Length: 316
Ligand code: AMP
Ligand code: MN
Ligand code: MN
Image (cartoon, rainbow, N blue to C red; front, side, top):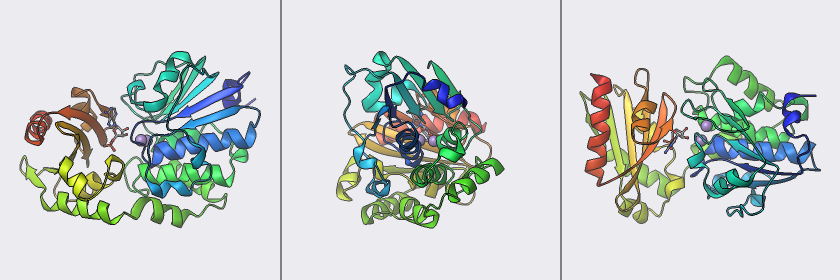
């Protein structure tokens, strides 16, 4: 029996969940897993939970069945957690941690402290989707499942660009492509295309960005009023920090946006040298060496100077 099947022994009900403010990898791994269970284990009653996501992901078959609310009083035999980074970031389905009989977590966050019945964390893997793929039977992966997993890999690697992309990532992507998925369409329509509002707020953030620490750090900020003006939400902020990071000469890019007045979500990216997960962890967040995040309270100036202070130590 394949290893993954052993976790499904005796399971009648399963819940699948990712992290708050879901990105492409979170959605891809959750929907890929959901589809895999539906395709191969129809006797298991599976439910997938997703927090609000961008419209571009709605092409994935079955995503309309995802639930945005959860009743933890209805316990499940198995809770499958994907790409979460920590238990605190599960979101709507977080309550199931208390009631689920068993928990199984697939992740690639170096900062995930674990605490699950079964835990497979591969920080060297590009994405949760790549980790999940490693546990599934390739013969049992349908085109629909493959499209979801491929999408997650595309998003977390910045279309196979970031240093987390390994030869194995390419082999996994190739085998998913062989299932007949619309790969170009997935890349274009879910990764590159932006709404008008997203492009406008990105333009404003880039225009007003500033550089510190001998121009090695670039900082961009979107205030609550900017989000209102361009009619965008938290889920629309994806991609801004990587655009900042594209600036020649920059080692670290910092992007903060105001979730609500006085509360900022901070995204950090680095190129080659700085471990930004250390900065994020200092403020209760986490992530990877080259991509991490945290939440901070205060004015934009206060939050920026706290981050810059930490970065100054790392640059010293
Ligand atoms: P983001 O800047 O939101 O795209 O996040 C970059 C990476 O850091 C992702 O892998 C996230 O899962 C992780 N991350 C972001 N925010 C947090 C947080 N508050 N706690 C732990 N991990 C986070
Ligand atoms: Mn993610
Ligand atoms: Mn991920």
